[in-house]
Length: 116
Image (cartoon, rainbow, N blue to C red; front, side, top):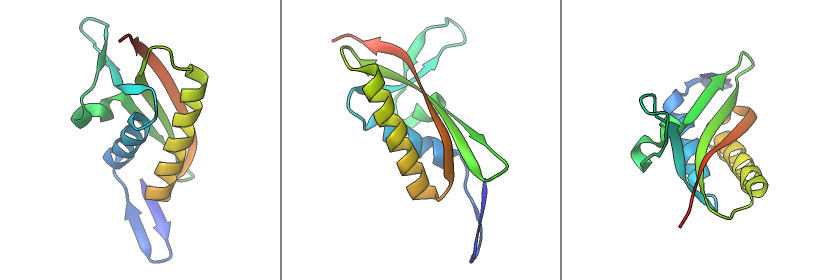
């Protein structure tokens, strides 16, 4: 993504957005981690910290804004509405703060729930 400032042009890679998003989401209460659905067996797997960017999809728009979709695994018994709102607000704030890009939307997909 390219951002134009008064001092010049800034290029931000997709990895920057996915790392910020993954870190922001996993730091929210009740989130066990990022998730990815396996292509071979169709099961949802918990991602390690170093590969959590696989659970994030970033879409760039013409107006220099981004849309983010993330897949998470949560702890059993958490309020899904509350945790989703918390993640949306945190991701939107952190991405805007660290990159300067406008976040158009954040979609949270709860793929699984961990018991115990």
